[in-house]
Amino acid sequence: MHVIRLFVVVCVASVLSAAAAAAQTATPKPPTPKVSTATKEKAAEQNANPDALVLADFQKRIDAYMAIHKGASKDAPPRKETNNPAEIKAAQDALGAKIRTARATAKQGDIMTPEIQNKFRRVMYPVVTSPAPQGTAGREVKKDIKEELKENTEERKEEGGKPVVLKVNATYPNDTPLPTTPPQLLMNLPKLPEQLEYRIIGKNLIIRDVEANIIVDFVPNAIQ
Amino acid sequence: MRRSLLFVLMLLVLAVSALVAQDLTLPMKNGSVKFAVIGDTGTGDKHQLAVAKQLAATRARFPFGFVIMVGDNIYGGNSARDYDRKFAIPYKPLLDDDIKFYAALGNHDDPSERYYKPFNMNGERYYTFKPADGVRFFALDSNYMDGKQLKWLDDQLATSGSEWKIAFFHHPPYSSGETHGSNETLRTQLEPRFVKAGVNVVLTGHEHFYERIKPQKGIAYFITGSSAKLRESNITQTELTAKGFDSGYTFMIVEIVGNDLYYQAITDTGKTVDSGRVQRVGKVEPTPNRTAQPVVATAGSDKKTPSKPVR
Image (cartoon, rainbow over all chains, first blue to last red):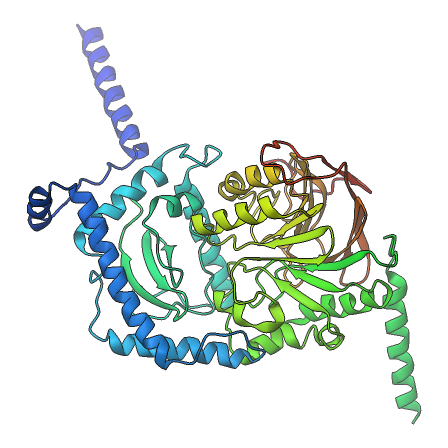
């Protein structure tokens, strides 16, 4: 009788510890699609894929931003090759200031709306969690991102650089390394105009205006 | 008066000793393509100045026509003073002699550096140039390898008829560095393209040491990221290293003579730490169907000098 009891206790303990270990190493669940009722209705009306409408909405918002960017560029000093680096910085700062004025009330989510954020997380999830995503040598993109974050943080501290402030219209600190954006992510994310780029800051994805050096919008916890 | 004379004499002795310390073994032929490679330079500190001084002293004997910068050209701030302190002042003797610098962007570089004329980037994050017939360079932005850049690279490689194709960018696809190591993600994007198009040599930085990688798929890879910053004892023992040097600041000088590319890695004190030759075998045609390239790298001394044991 005692032997049976002991056997049962050992079995239960083993199952529990195995479950705990599995939970620790388990890959986080993929994000569930979250599409607004309005988009769903529109999709039904147009017989369209709701995700396609979400991406079209993203494109529309990027186009609207670019209209502001182009408008601001007209009044800012031209971007041209120069021997005088002060002119480069002045042009960048002037453009940034004009865009900030034009988007004074802009806030997180204006471009990356909740359903666009959800779509981005869903697009990024398989790329960053797959043990051997397409175009890698069997190495997790997530590992690369984590390692680079660690390296960049160390280097930034060594050089006394400022941490990136995740805020719309904030300047990307000049003395902080720019993290590399994994090519696999770039292949899967919607294309941006050449004035804009994606960068991974910790677990977050930012859209950065390269010419104005400002954060246009961001997806918090984009890396699941 | 005596003091001034003594000071001048001391300066002369220092200058002569710097020259004597160098042991240049390149062919140094008239009409060859000669250039230097520096990486991770933009600190503005004494180490950058020491390497820059040695670079200028080297040019007195090896008259290279241009300098390749493999990224991290301006660390930290990017004010006009930063550009002066971290580039224009250290390399003034070379700039005054109209030596051209061709820069690639590193992860510490603001992409707006591409508008700085002395970097010769023509306002582009990635670009190509041909310093002489038969030799073409491809500068890439390894921070942001998007579809547009890859398409551009494919097009440029396909139309380049040059025998020597040399790519340069910041992140090393192969590295024995403990801090960074090989950038496998980038490698999977670039290497097949390089092999297909017949790229012969890849110059990179990022790791703050010098490493010559054993030829990979017919391509010679070099890391020169210690032209101002140094991570001592950072090279781990791997099967990749043909030659590693992580105990001093370095730059490279390179000479192309016909089918041979001669290289030499030199420290800020003028000591040669590596030298050898990359041989290009056969004529490379821009054939889209070619799957392997006829390039063999041969080394002067294939001695391993890893600092760290195998991990």
